[in-house]
Image (cartoon, rainbow over all chains, first blue to last red; front, top):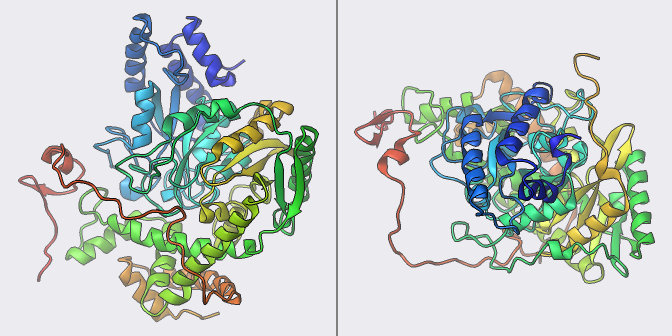
Length: 492
Length: 96
């Protein structure tokens, strides 16, 4: 077995029983990165020297008996998506404009993980500023899907998903604005959660669309995912949109029990545009849950088909405002022009890639005088209707289930300059961000050799039920034990 | 098609502080046209009595006491600034 074929709890037990050391685990992570990352491309920046020094320090704490046995994450290596700031460690958001940016503080999630004793091995590749569904929008390098190297890993947290799938790290953090944790988790056959909006602090997350962004864990099992969320969730006074809602014991929720659970399956999630292979696996998964005692029936999300347009209007509008801060003045790369405005323009035009420019243009248009009511305000009203659709369903159902993405991973290069085709990838995930509810993607089998993800959606702040259902399903099947084989690539 | 003119694209690019080449203006123009065309679909829905949603959870103004707390040193705050002078950010001339 590879070092990271074990669960986080098993790795923790190995440390407690002195079968391994933190330094060994961290070195195993770097060894694995050296072995496979040239093919995968998951990491943008490594922090080997500091990580090993920190591992040695933590090992000393272990020797001195300073181990909190309930703290499963202590001493475990982690990869962080490159849009979360890490003090002293370059953070680029996969953009040229931040090529030289070394943050002077940590994001709250990074601080919380460090307080728990994790060791950051490096920063993970992504679509530039989290805008994309294939990771082909990274300004540095593309990420290859570990299941088949000629295919995309999904995006925008493609590096996080691929690194976990390839067992380069036992877990990673991603961020999800319209599906950016769940869709790559689906494509790479790992577990990815988008928590409820407000569940996890966004302080130190480089903002894309502030009313939609959430940070979430990416792992190889539901139990691991619950351990990570437990550590990063909760109110943070530095993010005034983080919620004052108690964080329950997520591990206690993993009972394996789903008897009497009421599941709604929206007909829109299994209809047109969803591939046969994906539909088949999702229906099989529903049958598994039925055998475990859950009940499901077909329901409808009447406004589902409007979510794609509403999402791109809102996300792009917020992005155009959020990305105004990148102007080459206080940080990032400056391209000096004749005057100040010219310097802004040169810095931004040289620094941003095409997809980022496209969305800034779309958002600026939607917010501009004369168009605001017709596009931005209209989309915000449609958002209300979509949110109501979910609220109505949750009066009757405990969870809503469907596929995470309409297809399995597609080939690299297939959709890169066709925004509308690319955007359709998000069609089953972005409405969850619009509604603000939590959702997880768990592996539910392979279709033609590529992973399919099952999406389980819950009520606001009810990640516990989402975990419970995902865990019960996972324990009844073996899909999460299947591992990528690095097919394809230049050698084939 | 041609929902957005090249003149509008230039105007929007200026608002967004982007400098676009001629071919980018044409290319982005077409793509934005397609995206906005698709967004017209939202007009099928009557939203006259619907409140807009800007935040999905109930967020009110969050206040705190106006107290000084430890903050970044000048050295740290200036660490990523491309051009500095005497602990300040140096920028090209604002006024001609």
